[in-house]
Image 1 (cartoon, rainbow, N blue to C red):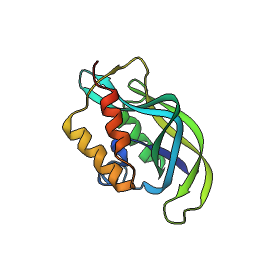
Image 2: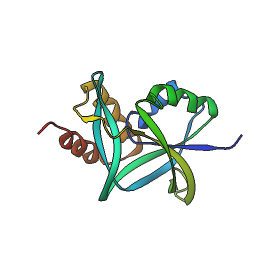
Image 3: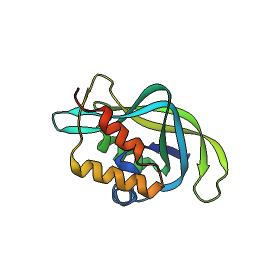
Length: 152
């Protein structure tokens, strides 16, 4: 079986949540999604994180190695292909233990761009904050996304 690498930037950074959803997934490292920003967008059921191109900004991502079964579970959770679509990217991944940098082909879920900005539930925000802490990411990225997603 070919290894698949999944880039997480929202609730799937939360280790507890990923263990439940994708029991065989394992953390392999971190990366930066350059020239992208984080935003909350959504639907009537709620607002969730997505990424979109933005020069000069970057989004920290956790990198998980996933099985075919894990990917099916993620597809279901992310509402693929109707709510989020998948994009393949090649990124430099910094190993979680080794700190070695390796270039890997990865996939990421991106919400369809026509969705409206919105504010997430307190629960979703807490899950994402815990994930940011799990990976040692600066929570200011998440807080900025929250403020940039508020209705003006």
